[in-house]
Amino acid sequence: MALDPVDEAHALQIQAGILGRKAGHGFEDTLTAKINSAAYPLTALATRLSNVATGDPADLLVRYIAESLGYAEVAGASAISTGALATSEAGVKWLSINGANVSRCKSDLVVTLKARNGVSTTVGLSTKQCNNPSPTNAQLYFTTARGFVNLLRKHGLAVSDIALDALRQFCGDAGCRPADDPAAMVGRAVDPRRYFWEEIQSKGRVELETLLTMHQDTITRLLLQKAYIDDPFVPEYMLHKTKKSASWDQTEVAMYTIDELVLRSARYQGFTTRAYSVHKGSHKDPPGVKHLAPRFGIVQMQRGGQKQHPDQLQFNLEAGYFYKL
Image (tube, rainbow, N blue to C red):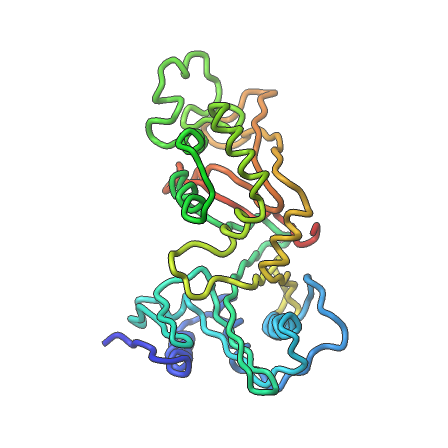
């Protein structure tokens, strides 16, 4: 029978069983287990935490959330991994937290902190992690050209079909590729599977660039928080493991509220493009050929290009952005 959690306590019991059966805990699983097993109460630090800090990620995260909420002391805390509770192994298809039925959400963890006065606050947390010696790009959002445009339209941003068609050219959707147009293939020496940013039809490109310039904060927030309709726990915080660590207690993490991350991203830079060349794969660029990669703030925008989903639209967080904000 499927294990349907009816409240947070039941969900925590199911989660403990799931994590206990796993041979090795991933970062999110360990983070969840550490928060749930920590000794409370926990007092706030005398000095304000930096956005980038090294130590026990669970301890640092609880202190950071407590500080942002104005808690002088954390009487207790619990974390529920939405990923662990959605595994087919446990049969769990939904989760009830604070009366909200959750079948899928953008948050990787849902964390509840209890203050000394008994008041509890529940927040959503998005996690990112890098296990390389130095920071790399982190995937933020993966969709199609049409999916991205629909996301913007659903949240009140006007996007014309002309702009949509230009974005489909950028992604290499069927019917929008150079390979679909014999005239476009005459003398073409670069990738025939898609148009690069500088090649997409100009009216649509100008509209997209204007949109990303004028509504940068809104679009950045949508990418960070919105993935599902009626999501009851959109992320309010982000925890990013920046690189490989020697031990759990010596892990470097970057921590932000989503509000803070959106603000700092805009201060970092507005919409811009960066020149690059394709040096790998079956469609390398001829010497001297450059393309333009669109980006805004800490967000990089590119064609997915993966073998399984080549024509998807991918948004990444710039490598090492936490050192630059």
